[in-house]
Image 1 (tube, helix red, strand yellow):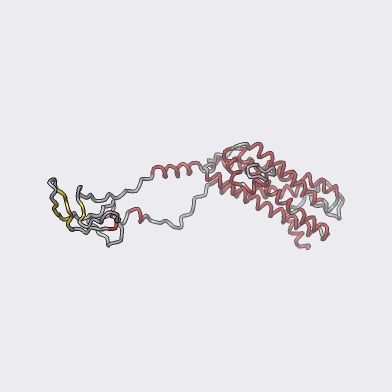
Image 2 (cartoon, helix red, strand yellow; image 1 turned 135 degrees about the vertical axis):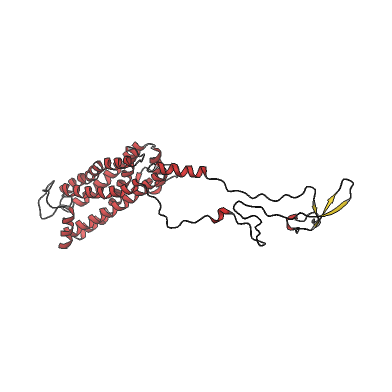
Length: 331
C-alpha cells in the first residue's frame, strides 16, 4: 500500500498512526466519519468473535451471541459516556461530546480487533478441548486482555489531549505565560581596548591573531600623526563583572567567571501535577468495567451450557464474579 494513500482499515491506521488519530480528535476534524468507521469495524469484529463463543452450544446460540456481544459493548458505552463527559466538564476540561465518544471508540475498536485476532485460538480449543469450564475461562481471559490493551490506548489519547490543554487549560496557559515572561539572562560586556593601539607582539600576515595573548602591562606600539612610533603600557584587562559576583572577584586562569544562573537550585523529587480529569479517567475505567461485567451477566448466555437447552436469556441470579470463582473451583 502506498504511503500517501490512507488505509481502508481503521484499525491499521490506529495502530500505525496513532499520533495522527489523536491530532484529528484534538482538531475535531471529520470525527463523524472516523467514529462511524470505528463503530462499523467494532460491530463486525465483535459479531465474529461472539459467533465463535456461541458455537460451543449450537449454531443458534452462535447467532444470538453474534448479536449480543456488540450490543454489550455499545450499551455499556451509552451508559458510561455521559459520566465521562460530565466528569470532564466539572473539572474544567474542554472536551466535546464528539471528542469523548471518539476517544472511547478508539479503545473499543482496539479491544474488538484484538479479540477477533484471538478467535482462531479460541476456535482451536473449541474443537480440540471440549471442556465448557476451560473454554469459558479462556475466552474471559482473552476479552480481559483485549480490554486492558484498549484502555491503554484510551489513557494515551487522554494524555495527548492533556498536553494540548484540553484537560487542564488553566495549567497549560500558566505554563505558556511563564515561558513568555521569563527574563533573559544577563550577558557579560568585554573590557574596552583603546582605539589605534597595536600590540607589540602583532603576528605577521597570514598568522592567526587570536593565538597571540598580550599580558597586562606589556608595551604596545602607537602611531602618532607625524609618523613617529611610541610605546606605552597596555591597559590591564579587567574581567567582565557579572550580576551577582562580588566586586574585584578574580578567577584562576582557564576558569570562566561563574554566572549566577548556572547555580540554579535543582529541585528533585517533586511529583508532576496530574490533572483531576486524568485521575477521574481511571475511576471511570473501573466504572466502565463494573457496568460491562454486570451487563454481560444480564445478557447471558454467550457460551451456552451444553447441559441446558437453548435460551436467549437466563434468569438474573448471582453475579459475574461469583460465577467465575465457581468455574475456577470446578476445574
